Image 1 (tube, rainbow, N blue to C red):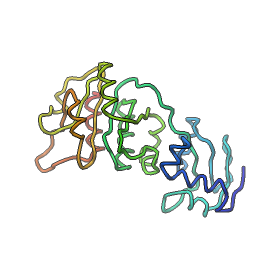
Image 2 (image 1 turned 135 degrees about the vertical axis):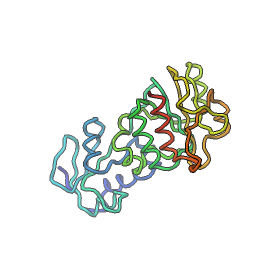
Image 3 (image 1 turned 45 degrees about the vertical axis):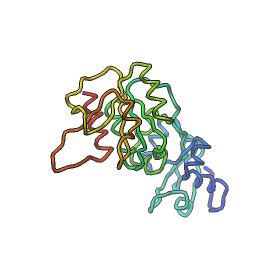
Image 4 (image 1 turned 180 degrees about the horizontal axis):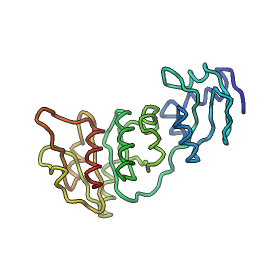
Length: 240
C-alpha cells in the first residue's frame, strides 16, 4: 500500500481531473465511488487503482489516503471510504438490439436507463450527440454497476440509423401522435429503439428516419412520463 497525505500530490491532482469529461475522454478512465461499486469493478477486472482511507489491500495498486483527500476527489457531499480509477468499457461491434438516446441530458435518467437495458436484455446503448457523459459520477452511481455490463457507443444518430437499416434493423421512434400502442406492436428479430430528450423528445430529423412509432397508453390525468420510465416500459414490452 502507498500512503498519500498531501492534497497537492500529483496523483491527487490527476484523480481530481477525472471529474471532468474532457479528461475522462482523454485518459479513457473514470472514477467509481462506494464499496459496492468498487467491488463490482474489481470483479470485472477493470480497476486501475484503489484509493481508500482504510488499511485494506487489493490486487491492484492501492493508495491509503486521508479523508481530506477523499473529499477533494469525491463529488459527493459525504465522501466515501473507498474509490477507484476504472477503465472505460471496451467498445464492441453491435450484436442484438439497440437503445439509441437522442440528447438525453439528465444523469439520473441515463443511469436508470442503463439499469433497465441490462434488466431487459438490451446489450447496446448508443449515445447521440448532446447526451450526458455516461461516465459522469451521477450516471455511474445511479446505474448501480450495470454500466460495466453494457456495450456503450456514441456518435451521430442518423449515421447509425442508416447502418442499422442496412443490417435489417427495424427503427422504432417514440411519438404520441400517429403512433402504435407499444403493447400492440409486432415483435421484430432486430430492432433499435430511440428515446429522446427529456423536454423536447426525439428530434424531428431523427423521427423522420424511423420505421414505426410507439407510444405508451396512459391515463388522461398524466401528460407524459419521465424519459427513463418510458424507456424502461417500452424495453420491457419489446422483451416480452
